[in-house]
Image (cartoon, rainbow, N blue to C red; front, side, top):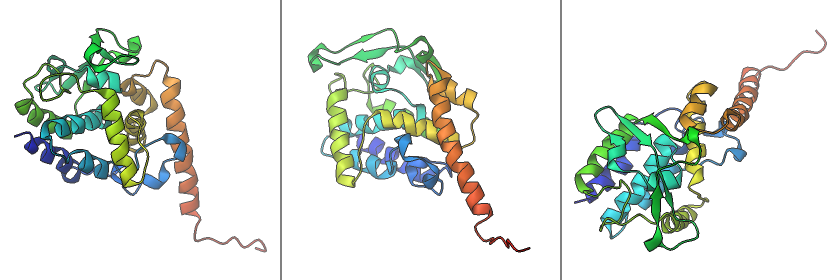
Length: 239
């Protein structure tokens, strides 16, 4: 039963906690500027998305969140990902296509073998928690696409976005799929990843985009470091 995947998805983040996990509400959350556009409590959102009467759809939506969280995939990229793009042995995912869905109805959705930019086409390493979830999901999803409905049709990005947005609102915060990419990059910054590597993993057309996020967070961390260093000192101006 796909319910097993649902359990796996929302327990992975508890079992494999990372000290820089921004969306997991960790000690570094206060270092993230408001302009970063990150998800304030991913674990609660994942728990909510993973609960419902249709366990297959819940599992697919949970996988959508995890792909964005761990790989920074855009919604069109995640929706077009096939199992042939996922190498569970070498622990890699290759982004090579996107789903065309804007301005058309669900029955008309189709994929194209191209990405947003040439830089977007890349092979990415799969983190261990995501690998666990993908292995579980593969056992219950016999269809070509990683994200799909129980009958194999595309998981509708527009409906998925609306559903998760409503769940997030119930939890007291806003949600947009692109926030997953911002959170992915933010977590890399907080983990001490260098700007060049961040730009490669984020697959931005220009490294300036990644560098802007990196700079914003670094500035906040520097201010925090200075404040923390001198918080207990009162200068004696008469000395």
